[in-house]
Length: 411
Image 1 (cartoon, one colour):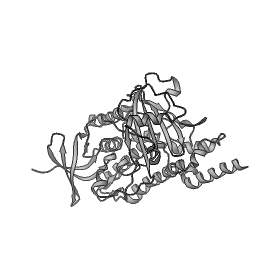
Image 2: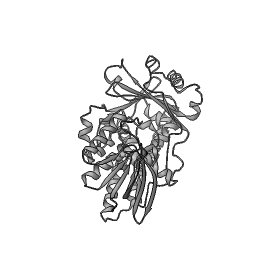
Image 3: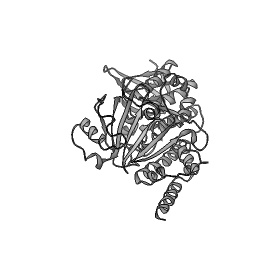
Image 4: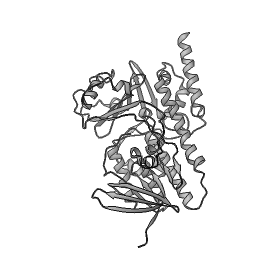
């Protein structure tokens, strides 16, 4: 029997894979999506940033998402003691979307997958990849489903959007030291029946506990709220007990939110993730590309995860389609260099957040409106806009601004 060879097989049906599939379906490419889990399924990464919207739009996914009434996100608030720093995406430097969503990823990802399926793309759920072989320009993929049935698939190109599954990175030994060390996270959901009205019950907020430790509050439109902590491994080691006991003790460490969630049951036992940052040696090779968390994850502090996932998923799909249609693609320049440029910008901001420099910039009592707009554009995910000096010269601009603020304090 003649084997069917797909143009592209996508591993993973999260946002990265679905944006890639949406673009490729519009090009009438022959594709298949393999997903290990059954949807809906829980996933973290619940706060998006505006750059995602460009990618959802190009993949043709915005109409389906708009129908769902997800909680709109117009900016972000940072809290430290009595200090407040707010960023409004409508007051950012340059062009681009000025809002996005806060979402329960179980619901959000299922909407994306359902939309892609409705457009005729086959998604095989509960299908785990067991073997991989690449020869003569063709991938042979061995899989097993939840009933133990084995199957084989063939493709000319693989887009690995497996997220934390990190399928190709693990199989090919691509793991590399992370850019951010020794940080862990713990999180859960509550049904917030007594949620404050207005912005207080709608806006994402980050409360700083100390330079390396912070708490997130993300309200969703369905009444559920996400609560979580990120901090150094050393900070986590201060707490003993079950994950629920740990989380309750950590909530006592907050200032602004202290006591607000004491009477709520957790919808699931808090999930703890140790050493959350991930990295790889390279994000493409002959016949494959890694996207999203299957390649790299920095830190959740600026909600960049889904932005990089959709950016890389869309770009990988475009380049793979061009290559399969006979064009010469410079993957190093057009993919790796481009994605790494954005990662490097965000890396500066994440590292300087934990150094304390960026926190001093955020909480300056009289920020320059122009500088705040430029930093806001970075937080919105527009980290490839070289017209923005806080993108073009990100390390120097952040460092110089911090030194200026410090010199003001010594005068």
